[in-house]
Amino acid sequence: MPINQEFEARATELIEAGRFIHARGWVPATSGNFSARLSDGSIAITVSGKHKGGLTLDDIMRVDGEGRTLDGKKPSAETLLHTSLYRLYPWVRSVLHPHSPNATLVSRLFADELVLEDYELLKALEGIDTHATRLVVPIFPNDQNIARLSLKVEKHIETHSNLYGYIIAGHGFYTWGSSVQDALRHVEALEYLFDIEMRLHGLRSK
Image 1 (tube, rainbow, N blue to C red):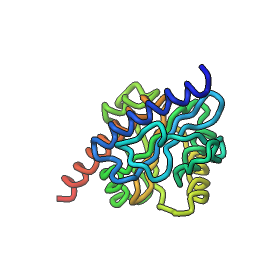
Image 2 (image 1 turned 30 degrees about the vertical axis):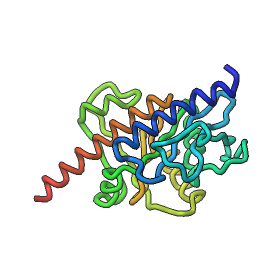
Image 3 (image 1 turned 90 degrees about the vertical axis):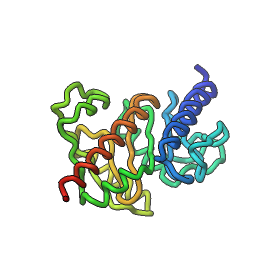
Image 4 (image 1 turned 45 degrees about the vertical axis):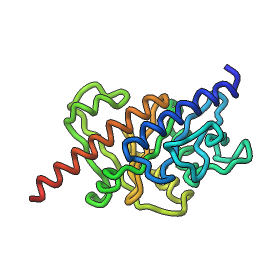
């Protein structure tokens, strides 16, 4: 498939993902950013400052593997957090980053990580086929220096396996998959599990 056609196909998927995620209140205002890797190694990613519930093809741009613009548009400020995941995980084809309320609340209640264990819905994540799974979601302090934050995330990933996402404290979460559809399924599954953990934490605190 010519790269222009591939770009348009992936961009359309990102637009649809944006509508789905926004409809659930997980990307308020202009928050969040989404991307998909193309066959030539370039990345289709949301343009900076665009409302994710009303994305158009013009709101998706291309960057290279280092996050440099290929079409003159301004990419998301957090582009390096996307490119680092593609570099670390050759199989990953899409990265989605919502600013969901539950992920934000979880980061206020747990210091360094959230443990998800023995949930049936863990099987919604690629490669997991049993509820008898222990999944750790690391939580990183927010940092406006994205290069520094990206390096911290990379160092953690290099020494920890079985990761499907991470949370930035007071901010939102990142997850990824082998397609936009798979990454979107991970968003929905993790958000559900974050919600359950929030409810469980509330019950336990009474």
